[in-house]
Length: 292
Image (cartoon, rainbow, N blue to C red; front, side, top):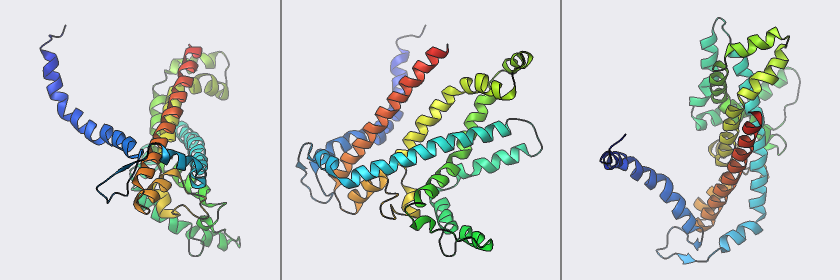
């Protein structure tokens, strides 16, 4: 049993971390919520309180709803394809073969690569004129589209890069989950005559469902925070087809100097992420109870 005198000592030891966490995490959220109720350009000393007018303007804005639609499009694409690709690669690498470590390193390298640097490389790859992708297609006499200048192709290219960037992380998490499954489950199922497909859907998939849920939540959060790769590759174009909510916030804050308006957008992003995460956690919790 711990002595009561140990509690103040523990609090003193944790105090620096609590102060740093509150200063750089809690305070910005609270201050953003405060700014969302005001009109301020970031330059004037006085801040004009306008209540929920910023939120009314956002709800009436066509740009906002387009950004939400584009963000959800990106979220669905990167979540589905990213998790599916990560699981497939993890299944392929979850066995012993020559060069296993090399392949794992290759797939994980994009995770630790700078997003800005990767976005610049991808922009050159998909350049309509001198890009390597269209140059390769022209070799086979196939006319390549204007990848990043076409409203049809721009977002699929962005999603492909996002999947490539997160593939190694999803793979490593799935590998850890696959290696934690006891081989006895598969041995018993094999004795009962279950094939590899049945074993995957009846044993592997249910046992790694908590990991899948965690990756879905992380992917959703990252989708609403995406900014740098789209800013470098398309800057929201063409025709606002890649104008995600993060770009809308950035544009209003640092181009139009509407800090109150952009803070309100930030609070809406926070609430959307909170609601989606809460619903996913409730769904996953009910699923685990039904499983057991």
